[in-house]
Image (tube, rainbow, N blue to C red; front, side, top):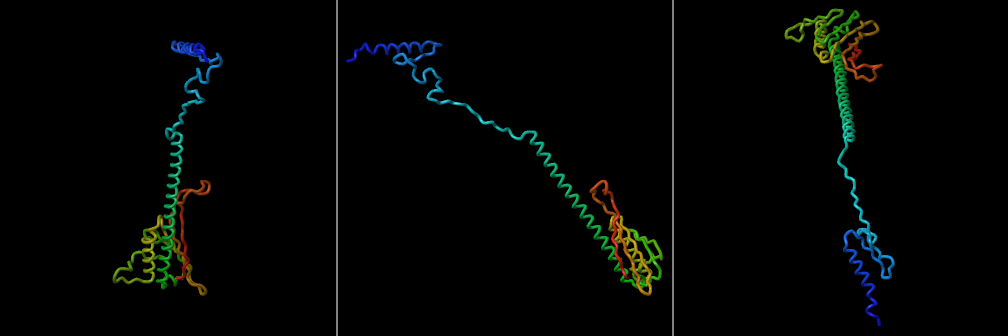
Length: 232
């Protein structure tokens, strides 16, 4: 049988440990029953016991776009807007060019139709003739064409030469005036025994050209023309 006094050394050591732990500023030290190594976890921080380590980690937070990213975005948007503006300007310029060229062709065809309707004058020329017609309807050249007789007036009697002059005047003040800086020219060769009268109708106008290369092309206005050969 065990004697009661055999348990006293263990109780005394526990009592001494508790007394030592109550004193401020003292770190208690545990020893085994035989004075050996302290039990696992003794004297360690509570958060490191049982092999557990608690770490405080926070993910970095983004605070939005930086100033550099905003500037890059503005540059990209500006380049895009400039490209759109350039495309619109090119489209408007192309539309204006197409309109002028269409009007030039219509003007030449209009004068050709007037010549075909008045073959008594245009088809019977016995000498070379050349006339310039302005946008206001002023005719200059030889042989002279009358610009004063209004053949469309009621009761007016017009000769073939009067009708030719009236048609040329209306041609200049009508279709030619719709062109930017428009003017017209008529040149005819007389008939011979082998060939009929041949007339060349030329329509001139001003057209803005888009600059492509400073060494070869400027952005100033340039004169354009449309030419048609007619046999009255």
